[in-house]
Length: 435
Ligand SMILES: [Zn+2]
Image (cartoon, rainbow, N blue to C red; front, side, top):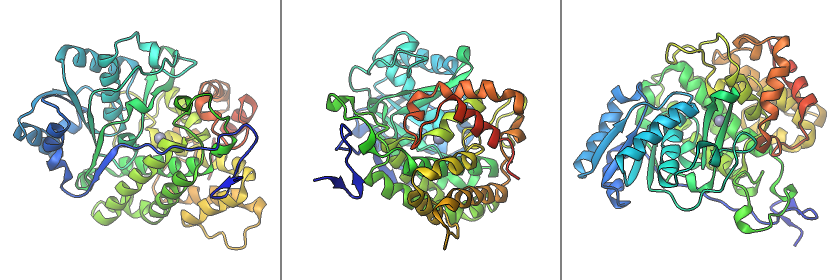
C-alpha cells in the first residue's frame, strides 16, 4: 500500500495517524447536566475555574447549581485571566494545591479552560514551572501519567480548547506566548451548550470566529502527516501530526459553516441560528486542529499578542493593552496563505471554496490571492483591523516580531513550506496593511 486517502507515503515518513478527542456533549441545555457528569466521573470535591467576567453570567450559575444539586462540594476560582500568563497560571495552581480537589470544571473561553488544565497538571504532578512548558522556553518534560477528571464548558465559539491537549499562556519574562502540549491535558469531557452565545459581544464573536477559521484552514493546509518523520516509538507521535484524512473532513465542514455564518453571527446578535452554527464549527475545528496542528499564522500571532503596546480591543476587559488571540491570528492569515498556496494549490483552492469564495476558473498561481482576498473580505465585513499596522505595529517592529515567531518551532515545523527568519520578516511586512 502506498497511500491513504490521497496521501502519498514518503521514505522515512509516518504511515499512521491517530485521532484523539475529549468525549463531547453538545446541545441546548446541556450545561444543566454538568453535575451528573461530574459525579459520574467520580468528582466529589470540585475546583470550578472561571474568569471574573463569566462569574456574573447566568450560565455560570446554571453550572454551579447543577454541581450543587448533584451533591458536589464546590470551590470557585474566578481568577483565570483573559489571555493567561505564567503568573495567573501560578495563582490557579496554588489554589488547586491548597484545595485537594478530585476534579476540575472550567467555564469560560480558552483562557479559563487552559488555566484549569495547568492547575490540574501541576497539582497532580508537581514540578518547577518550566518543566512541562514547550521547548525552547521550557524543558518539554513528558506528563508522567493521567490527570484528574476535567469537564470543560466553553462559553465562546472559539478556541476548541475543550477538545485539545494544549494550554497557551503569555510567558512574562520571555515577552512571548508559548504553551504546554500533551495528550494528557485533554479534558475528560467537553460540554458545549450553544445557549451561552446570545450574550457574547460582537468583537468576541468575531475574534473567536476567526480563531476557528484559522484553526481549520491551518490544519487543512499543514504539512501532510506522511511527510513528518515516523516516530521512534508510538508514544512519541506528536498531537500536531500534520494534515490527515480525518482532520481534513472536520476542518472542511468547519470552514463551510464559518464562511456561511460568521458575518451574520457577528453583526446580528439576534441571529441565534448563526451563533449556534459557529459553536458547532468551533467544536469540529477543535477536533481537527487538535490532531493536525496549526502553523504559521498562529506562530506569528504569539509575537503580535506578546509585543502589543497600546492597542485595546473593544468589548474586552478594560485595563491592559490586548490583541485578542483570534484577532492576533487573523491579521497574519492573508499574508501567510498568499505565500503557502504554492505548496499545494489544489488544497488551498478547496479551502477557499469551502469558505465561500468564488474560485471558478482560477489558475493554480491565482489561488493564494483569491483565498487571501476572501479572508480579507470576511475581516472587513466584521470590522477586524486591516493587518498588524492597525493594532499598533510598524516597520521598525519587524525584527522583534520575527524573533517572537521564530521561537514557535513546534508550529513552524508544521507549515507546508520552510519558514524561518527571512520568510517571517517578509510575512510580517506583508501583514502590515491589507486595505
Ligand atoms: Zn487559536
